[in-house]
Image 1: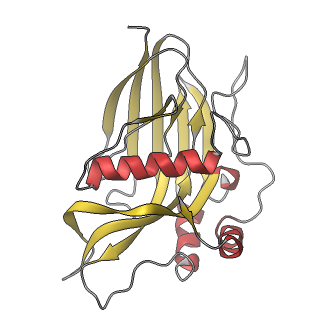
Image 2: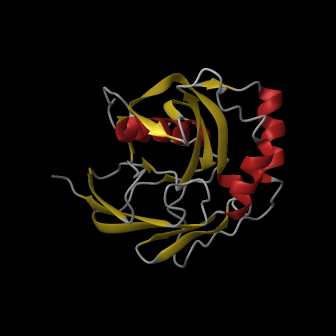
Image 3: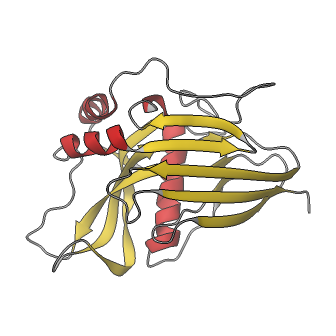
Length: 232
């Protein structure tokens, strides 16, 4: 991934997400959370690297002109997302021992078809993005166990980016962004991420309930992942 200048990225994250010592995280009862701690370097990459890979893959799969790369990197599965129709349900089968990544919320910076409209700049958009993450509400539930619950600001330790993709993700179709304006490629991403440890063999349900995501086509949406962990 091509990162924004380190000093700028650190400054922007401080502005956007603030300093939160204890996010609103519920680990449930009877064992460690299925979530990998965001400060960790699990399965060969950092928390940020995994979430950038997943969101880049999901953007390519959902909006890109293709080809779509493999959904598995280093034995870690990258989950899809839905950009238009919600609620949405996905059915996913994993081999035992497979970690996976699925960011609940992310913001994409874009390139436009009007040469008079500059590319989205995360530094210039800092105040706007601060408002987006301050208001969005995220609740993650896995098999009835609440894992994350709070605004993007409250869940700041799970934040990642802004990070530029190695190459722009060119859209298969122009995406309308106002009268006479279309986005034609994704350039960078930032968001609230999640990396999961392998789940036990059996059937699992992961639900993302997102509210007040003011820049989304549907500001309130629900994604449900029906996950089957099976050796066959």
